[in-house]
Image (cartoon, rainbow, N blue to C red; front, side, top):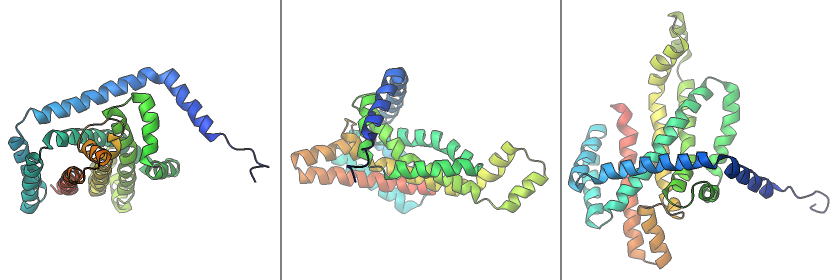
Length: 276
């Protein structure tokens, strides 16, 4: 069949697009990189300025307030274990990467989800794009990320945002669309404006679904920490990657277990925070 149909030069088109973006918008990528680095450094400095025991106490209180005592006890034991085995600073780097990626995902994803909920046409356009973002192997995102932002933590955040953003968009859209039509009609009957209807009726009722999307974004961003380490992002993922390269089973298990502890802690907190 290839003898009759010319090969589509898709790779050449993509390379040309990347070259064009680098040629015309490199200054924008530099600004994005600077802002992202600033965010991450802010979170790292904020978290490291506190003694580990104080930060553990804060996380325990958050876990207790959002969940229950069993999660608070798990958080205390898990974080003390991470500090004991010497991965505290790496955990801080991982938290900074995840927090930054999730904040960017929320800032970009929630408005898109709101707009999609208000327009069937936009929803039809966005859904295939979200499928593409979630099914494309995450490693592929690292290639243009390195070209745009060089090696380091910024390409890791870039790939994490692309991979983690779809659940926030999907479930924001879904939550708003699931608000009962009777309540929307009642708001219209009382003369509510579009913004009043959104902020006082739709978003409050959709909040549990939206928070479920944010919870998924948190977990997907955390799942990217090892992948991000391939382009120089620090943290627990870098320790796993280093252990794989040096075939150190015990070290890899320790770092992997630390990631699991952080994942369970963030999952339970983000899963239950909207209930408060």
